[in-house]
Length: 443
Image 1 (cartoon, helix red, strand yellow):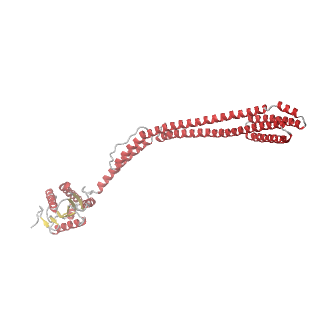
Image 2 (cartoon, one colour):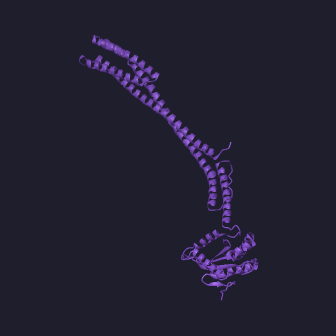
Image 3 (cartoon, one colour):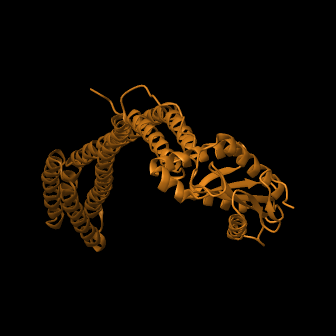
């Protein structure tokens, strides 16, 4: 069975929850029992109070009966009335005691006491009747023989029973309280230990892996796709996440490689293999976008092949394409890392020379013309030479906000137009006029 990260967390947290549920259930049961015992204890205390009042009223009734027998005629009715009142009080307390006593043992004790009390009251009333009949001495003698002890013993036994029950209830309450306290402490301690174990697991198992994943993700976010593959031990969601992350980085590498290839293709001329017009437009915009105060010179060379249409018509388009490739190759060799050589369109080429003056651009153009002449590509239909030649326009300016790339291109195009109008196969610098083939000013 594979224990995934989710299952491990579920088991850990479920154990903690189960412990708390057990504690709550146990505490609830014991608390309910404590409540029941407290209610029973309260009822027992109330019954004990009733028994104490019963004992008081019963003894008072017994005493009032004795006083009646000994009292003179003018006060004996008071003692007789008090006796009857005490008997009624005992009856009321017995009724109350019966109402609040629910256990069978207590009910039996109450029933036995009622019988004894009823017999005791009846006997005392008969004795008191003897005095009314004039047999005072006989009444006093009989009253003395009829002891109150059975009543007192019955009440005492009942009181002791309730007292023992109260002690038992209080003991159970204290015991339940100790059990609840022990359970709370035990479960809380175990839950703390288990929580620390889960936290240790999270910090050592999860956090370390998440940190590694975070570090790799940050490397990818910063553009470093050569991040090493992640590998975690075990079979869980983090391992699945690591594998997904590895697949993502591989896919990103493939996408970026494809994008770079597409970007390269989108900025390259399909025929000659050198940068195209789009590449030139993006490059000159970047070169021009400099902070204010950092303006730098930038030069442009624009040329096209003289009488190239005639070349195509005479030699054919395939030879024309080959001628363009040769011219582009020579241009790329001459420019090298000092600038950007691009095919501008048709037989027209352009060279961007950042940080170079017009004189440096003219030298570059002259070197290119010399290399092209050395290649000696035949061109029988040219009116200026038996070999392929080019007309070149050069312009230079400062790359600042006062000028724009379009302004520079326009000046360069005007210089190229002047080179064509003055005979072709030459270099013309905007604002300076025609240059000779080696780059010197024409006289």
